Every structure is written in C-alpha cells, then in structure tokens.
Image 1 (tube, rainbow, N blue to C red):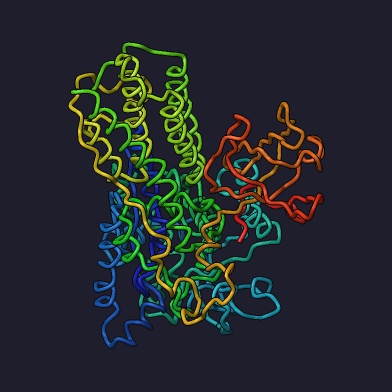
Image 2 (cartoon, rainbow, N blue to C red):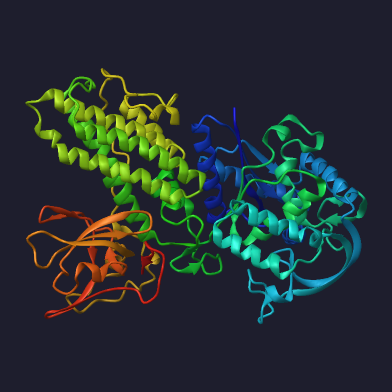
Length: 630
C-alpha cells in the first residue's frame, strides 16, 4: 500500500490558535482525507513548538514556569482541531521526551558531519520572530519585515552550521525539481535568496534558557527554529530508526504559511543533506488571510470569530468557504458578506436545492428508488462527466489547487441541476420509466458528489449519503469509477435541508464599518451590503461571435481563471467580434443565468453607456483572470 505523509508546521504556543492556524490545518486535513479516499496509508502530523525566548517571556509575565504555561496552552490547539474535525494521526509537542530523544540524535549526527563549528555571531535579531535578519532583509526602514518592529543588535558566541556549503546543492535541487517548492511565486523568492548568497547560521543560543541543550555542549541551548524543523522526523520514532520513520519518511508535503518558507526550503534541506537523510518531496507555502483588506490583528480588533461563524453556518460550510473562496497559494481577503454569498449560492442554491428537489420528486412519484431502465444520450453525458470530474479532481488535488478542485466539483453539481431542467423530469408522469431513469441518475450523481466532497465537508458528505439511503463505508474514490453504485429498490428518504438560506441583511453592523446612525436622504442610495452582494470579477474574452438574426448581440466565452462562462452581450453595434477577443473586462459573476435569444447567458459585462456611445469596463493593466473587483 502506498503511503502519504503530510505535516503542518508546529504552531508556536506564545498565544492561543487563530484563523491562520486553522487555515493551514484544514487544508492539510483535506489532503489527508483525500489520500485516504484513494486507499493510501496516510500519516497526518501537526503539533506545537514550545521552546524559545518568547515562551519564556510569556511565562514570566504570567508568573509561572515555562513548562506549566505550555501545558496550559497546548490543549487549546488540540481542542480547536477537534472542533474543526481535523483528522490528524499524531500531535507532536517539542517538550515531549520523544522529540528530545530525536533532537539529541539528529544534532549529534549534524556535529559529526563536520559542518558545525563554534564562532562569534553579530546580527540583527527580531524577538517576536526569534530569528536574525540581514541588512538587505531589513530594508531601508531597518525594521523586521514581518512585524515592522525595531530589531536589536545581538553579539553572541554560538555554534554555527555551514549553510553556505550547501548553496549550490540547493540551487540544483530547485532547478531540477521545480515542484519542490509550490507555488511558483515562492520558488522565485527562494531562488533570489539563494543566488544572492547565503550565510552560515547560528544553531545555538547562550542567552536563552528555555530550550533543549546541545548534546555536545549542554551549556548552550539549540536555536528554536533549527530544533523545531526536526519535529517532522522526531515524531516518527527517528531516535530508534523505528518502523514509522522507515515507512513514512520522506514526507510528501510540508504545508505552511509563506512567512516560514525560507527555514523549510533552505535550512531544513541543508541539514538533512548534512546528516544523509532524504529530503521532503514538496514544501507548499500558502498565502495570508486578510479581513476587509486589512491584516488580521488583535490590535486592530478585526479577528475572524471562528466560533461565531461555525455556530451560525455550521462547521462544514466554514471549512468549505476557506478552501473555496481563495486561490490557495495566494493571499486572500475575507469579508463576512462574501461568506454569506458563497454559502447561499454554492451550498444552499446549488447543492442543497439539488438534493431536496431530487428527493422530493422521488418521494412524490415512487415507492422506492427505481432502476434506470430507459437511458438516453444525455444520460451518457452525465456519466462521462462524472468520470472526467474524478480525473480532474485527482490532478488538482495533486497540485494542491484546492479552490479549483472545488470549482470542478461544482461544475458537476451545476450540470446535474441543468440536467433536471433540460429533461423536465417533473413533467414525465406519463412516462415513469424515463422519469425513474433520470431520477436514478440524479441520485447516483449525488452519491458521486458526496464522495468528492468527503475531504472538504466530511459531515455534509455523510449526511448526503444518509439521505440517499447508503452508508459512508465503501464510498471511496474507487466507487465512483463505475456508474451505478446505488442499488435500485432503496427506500426513499425524506429530504432534510442541509443549508438553510441566510439573510444578507442580518449581518452584524460592526462588519460593515458604517455608522448605523447615518440616514440616507436620497431615494436611490443603497447600502454597503447591497454593493457587496455583487460579485464583480475580471474575465478575459477568449472567443466572440455574432448571435444569428441579431444586430446587437455577441455570444462571448469569458475566461474567469477557474472556469469559462458563456455571456450574451448587447455590444455588437460598437464592437466587432475580433475587436473584443483578448480584452479583460469586468462582469457580474453571480447574476442568475438567463436565456437571451435561446442562448444561456451566465453573467453580464459592465459597460459605460451614453446615448449611442458604449465602452466596456476593462482593466488598465494585465491581472489574473477571475480577480475580484471591489
């Protein structure tokens, strides 16, 4: 059986967990669950980093020993993972005996490699980061690039690791194996650092008391960042070269936020090279979350209240939104209005209504699930799309393109909704064989969809399967390779709505940033909520043709990055088809589809119009297709 080993970073316990920790961990959980669905043996590791000056500082402020503080704060992480339904197989604490034993072995081998030497260090140190920065990294401001705080000049006699020795090997590694770092933007950053030249790094601290002593010099403690990286193997019984280590190392994916990429892509591989261990297969560094355009910060008072969102919308919609809304490798801006819009559009309208409608039609017209005995050509299209979706999904999950993977599933969800509309199944009461076949196919499609959604929304997937009358056991990716997994004759359940629609107007006033005492005195003024109901996105027109028998309509195909939309636009009197191809225009992406001259239009382009003059709203510089306009 093939194996899959995925890790999150170990989270620093100087404060309780927040949405950033949850974002990384949910993503890792999705990948772990997906690979289990594939029948692989999965090990999913997360944990906490409990050493260093910052932990000592917080403990001193609370008037308790560092270990006591760590013992208090570590459970807040495990409790959150339970609340978020995280399926981690292990949880490593760096104060554990297991970790300390592995650290002793690793740093002894590192010392024996000949790449450790004693020297004097003088550099710019950021206390919150617990790391040194070069003059170039600090920039003209002279402040930490992460925290924007002043750094201190530190002079210490420490032990150093000869990182410069591995500079060329690291460059060769990345050039020969580009997928070692994803996404490409992170790879470019790291290559810039490597080609600019590395410096040897200090691996110990004489001035920090709370840490693990060097095995070859107990008067110095190991620098927390070099110690923390080794958790990925200490959790595997590395200290005894155990079966778990031999089976699962090297890791398939180290998942993390982008600010710690350099440690994982430069220092960690170099240390592994020095002790002769295999390197992890991939480092994936996702972007940051912001809220309403601002960095999320307790100081700004704009934290995302996970408890409130989960209570209002449910756990799985919470998981779904953060995996679906943002391109996983890039930064993403959260607004609560977008959460409600995505919930109502994708979950309540597309998926929830499909399930309720199919079950309703079945219970109204049949005693049990009918057999599909009267197939048609359109049914074969549905079956083929299910297989194609499974193939695309596998490719995208292997690329950690989680948002695109979900959009691919939703293309299938929307196709089944159109299948119900196209066949007008509700009108086939006089043809029960055909009606039964269509409804069977819709039920089978829902089964397949539930399998696809299991990694992202495990509770919802199980509820769908329960309403279909099947057990979750056996509903894996192999089960979607052959159409017909549902047996005819199953009892028909009464549909229970999974996603009650939410009222956008019930949003808390604090989310809008507006003074509720402001009165509108002009009849056509609208609220900020109404503006944010519009999903405006940049799309590139990739094809255009005249609509037959129309002088003003063009049928366009618009690329939104993750999907292509067909748009019918009344611009033919101003623009010839060839004039618009390649333009990046702004469109309303969440407009309900409509038929124009018998052609479905899946959105609306924006244009400035004055009398007979018309000009498309475009962007003044190239920007990724699908970018949100706000």
